[in-house]
Amino acid sequence: MEKQFLLGKFWNPDHVMEALAKFKSAGVKVYDVYTPFPLHGMESLLDIKRTRLAYASFIYGIIGFSVAVLAMSSIFGSFWPMNIGGKPNIPWPSFVPITFELTVLFAAHGIVITFFIVARYWPGKKAVLMDDRQTDDVFVIALDKNKIQDMDEVTRILKDNEAFEISEKEVTV
Image: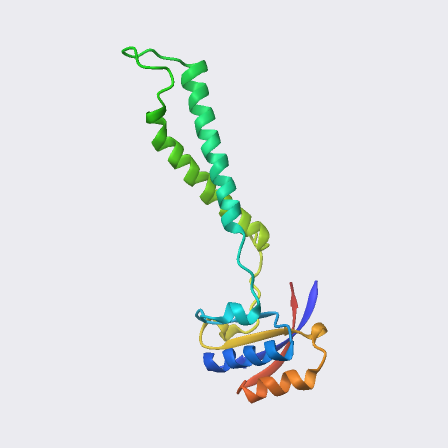
C-alpha cells in the first residue's frame, strides 16, 4: 500500500520537540518521528500508548512454566518412574531450575516472535527510510498527507521551528 508523506527535516532535536508540541496543540496527527538517537519525552507528544508486550510475556511464561511442570511430572511420575533410595518419584525441589529455565525460554522467544508479528517484520522485508541521513544526523517528522487538513499551517509550523528541508515522499508501508 502506497502512502504519501510530508517530511520535515531538522538538525536540532530541540526544534523537533518544539514542532511536535505545536503539532499536538494544533491537533495535527504526526505519523512518526525518525531520530538518530532517542528523544526523551517524545512519547507523550506523539500520544504513544504503553506496550502490551509485558502481558504477552507473562502469558508465555505461564505456558513455559506449565509445560515444564507437566513434562517433568509426566516423565518422572508416569513414563519413567525411578525409586532411588526411597525418594519420591516426583521430586518437586529438583524441578525448580528446569522450570525457571523453561519459563524464561518461552517468555523470551514468545515475546520476540510476537513483536515481529505485531511490527510486521519478516525475513527479507526492505527497511523503509524516510531519509538516508535519519540514522546519522537528521531528525525527520513524517506526516500522512491524506490526514492533513491545513497544509499551510503544517508547513508554517515546520518552517517556524527551523526545518531545513520540507519534502514529500511516497512509501510502501
